[in-house]
Length: 94
Image 1 (cartoon, rainbow, N blue to C red):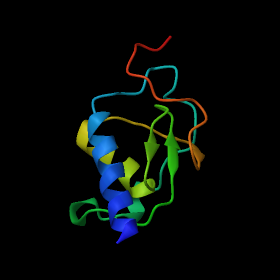
Image 2: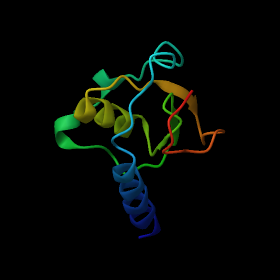
Image 3: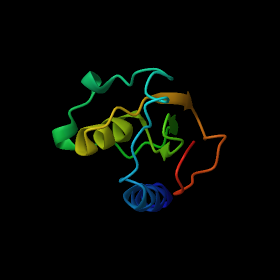
């Protein structure tokens, strides 16, 4: 039950930030997500395995990062596995 609540809160947080895209300077950094490993038409698992994207946003798992890229036609890459070190911001980036 707790895992479901965490997943729902994370999903809600991702919805708030889904309009952000990667800046040109960030596109070459990080590693490419293994999106071919997931059937995005069936959705993603609820397993919390945090991924920090090159857009400095936290994704619940690699599949959710792939889903974000597919839905928004972006190329957010994996900056690091685990929590993001730089806080999220809606302001313009340098």
